[in-house]
Every structure is written in structure tokens, then in C-alpha cells.
Length: 363
Image (cartoon, rainbow, N blue to C red; front, side, top):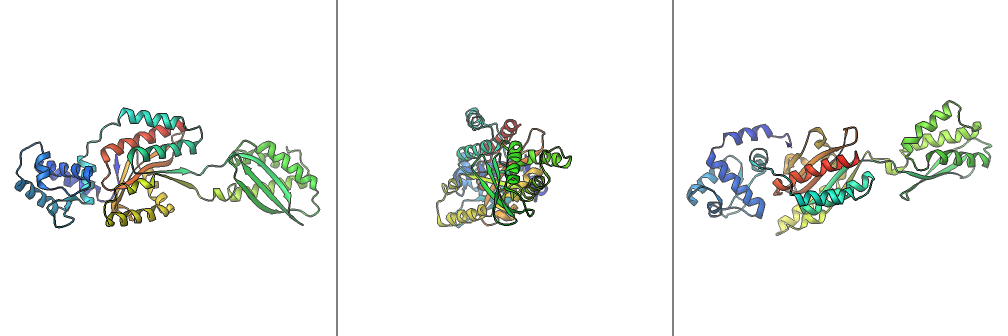
């Protein structure tokens, strides 16, 4: 498990320096807070601790932990909540991460394995399942995929112009204009259409483009000079646009279950936090950039609150893990996004297992 790098070494050193009693008080306080979302008082802790400590002794320990910046008092009540620094210490040094429940493993494997053979189908189902099991938002950053082509056609569009129509099997249609040589006969457009359809249909543009280009370069294509020029210009145009406007971005962000983030709203301040979080999600480029950081490490990465500027106001956490293709190359990230009081012990193995399952399926 890899944490976000900010202050990690300092926090781990602090965890090792805490005495046994402060560690126990702190760990049980954080456990209680993550379960309820409410400030935790000395009376509650005295009932949870395995050793007998008076409420007065517990309050003294809590005061020391607050002085270290690990706890905070949100209002005038005697209860305390962990700070982001405290949550980082808990996650890095005190959290006992178990294994995923067998029933949840089975549910993930069954639903994701049966989602379809395409990468997008697998990732969409994985995101949906993670969201449902965690009751948070599920996120996936995926590589942009070339669509499988169904049909390509060259259509006259006035003097010196031809409209290239590209239709993919998922129903997407892209149109592009290219210039044509003067005196081009209609038969040349028909021949170019037939030639490319025979080589592109049922394949992605990326997989077939190089083969067609090599044929043209070595004069193995049985095309006259004008038709070959039309084919070459059409391929060049498609290469520049990546197969259309849908290919303009390098990464795709899939978000499922954002409405779950409203489940914990109990006060107007929480509502404002969630509204800010929704605004963060809308800034997809920033969110993709954050998740891409998870590709740098091996295993689960955790970002808590303001450790990343994207969540500096919304008070949210991300648990993320990379997934790889058949060659072992990391190609994307899968994650859970929720409030900082996530059930880390449950969600960390859930994200880790899902990322490994996705890797196995797409390989």
C-alpha cells in the first residue's frame, strides 16, 4: 500500500514515537469516528478501550494528541475528530487492512467477468460494482480506445472537395472534408471507398492504417494514381484527427455512483462540501491528472483531503490502484472517491482486488 508522498515520512516517524497508550486511544478514536462520522468523547472511548482508563486519563491523552496536530475539536463539545494528519498516521501506521469478504470477491468477479469482452464494458462494470459496494463514487481512468470501424465512404462535396464519412460499429459517425485533385472521376471515389472498406471494416483505424500505408508506398495496391492519392489523403486526415473528435483526448474518465456522496449529508456544511466535490469531479482533466499519479506506484495509493489541491476544499479522499494490459504495462487507474472518513480497512482491499481482477480480465 502506497500513500501520497506529502509528509508521509514525518507521519510514519510520529507513529513510531507514540507510546502504547496514546496509540491505543488514537486508534480507537479514529475507528469510532470512521464508523459514525461524529466527534468522539472520552466516555465513548472508555467503553471501547481494551484496558481500563478513566475518562479523565483519556481526556489528558486526547489533549496531548491534539497538541501533536493529530486530533481537532470541531466545536465546543468534548469530542474530538482526527485531522488529515491524523488520518494519514492512522492509514500509514495503525490501520489493519484485512482481506476482502469472500461474498464481495464473488460478486465482483461474477459481474465484471460477465460484463463483456470489451475493455470499456469491463471497466464500466468494475466502476459500477465498486461504487455499489463502497457506497461512494467509483472512478476509472482508461486509455482512449479506437472504435471498430463499420464503414468508410468518400462523398463528392463540390468542386475540389470530398467528404470522408467514417462510421464505427457503436454508431458514432465522423465527417471530414479533404481537397481533391481536379478532374477526379466519380469512379475514383467509389474505388477508394471499396478499397478502404475491404481493409478497415471490423478493425480499428490504428491497427489497419499502417498496413494500408505500406501497400500504397510499395505500389502493391491495385489503384490508379488519382485513387491512390485520395486514399492516402483520407488516411492522413484520419491520422491527424485520431479517427475523429472522440479521439482528441488521450484518457477517458468513467464516473459511477456520484449520488452516493449525498448519503452522508447531515448538515448544511456537509452539503456545501459535497457541492464543492461535485465541482471537483466536473473538472475532469484535473481529476484524471490526480489519478494518473497512482500509476507511479505499485499497489494502492491513498490521497487524503488537501494532500492534493483538487480536494483542498471538499475534504475528500481517494483510494486508487493501477491496472495493466496483457504485456504488464500500466494503462489506467481504478479508484473510490468519498469523504475523508472512508472505511479504509474495507475499501483498500476492495480497490486492490478490483484492479487485479481488471488486469486479469483484459489480459
